[in-house]
Image (cartoon, rainbow, N blue to C red):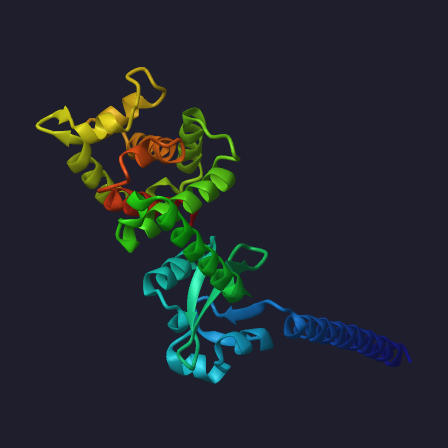
Length: 314
């Protein structure tokens, strides 16, 4: 009888464990069902991959955005194959595979070949121990907004070209670079400098990049070479440098001088020097000095400044 009691007791215990496990599985299935339904009803396109980027799920909004099925993307070699800019695709993948995140606007190529625009938020998915177990991308379709902005931009350029003949005489690429600079600086100022536009804030911003470990991801060498060729000749500052109107006692001028003459103490100091120049370029444009010179010969200047701002904005 004693043996029978233990067997029965063990049987009841095993049965309880089995019921508890079954209940947990049932709840997990219900949770998974709810999550899947929420993902399918989301207006944002959602993509999930394994840690190596192998595509295994996307929702209905993503199919509507690009036209690909899961099988299509697997055959394509993964979701990065739909990016119009392959350098951007690689930057996104490397950032999140390293455990970080990436946010920015991207161009996508649909299955039909059409180009669309999306705001992407991409992240690594980690377990409780911090191990990366997957990657997720959330895409918000901003195609119509981008087209509206482009139509508005073209109207502004057409109006300004008519009202200011000197601006109208510029090549289209110059006009676009100048307008892009205005937009990019405004965005950089609002998101990275908290709308506090002074050189001390720029210095603190660059210091924050050093402290969070992201300073060395930016490639500023080519921009520095351009600045040196434009603003220094035979060891002396050129007329172009004087046109920047940087006062000898201005905050940050020491960073500019050392960067241009190759005597900076660190990449941090070089980046500060670059941004101080862009700051004065912005002042000259927004406050009218560049307009007095009809903006001639400024295409490379604005184009290269735009490239650095876009890289910093991320």
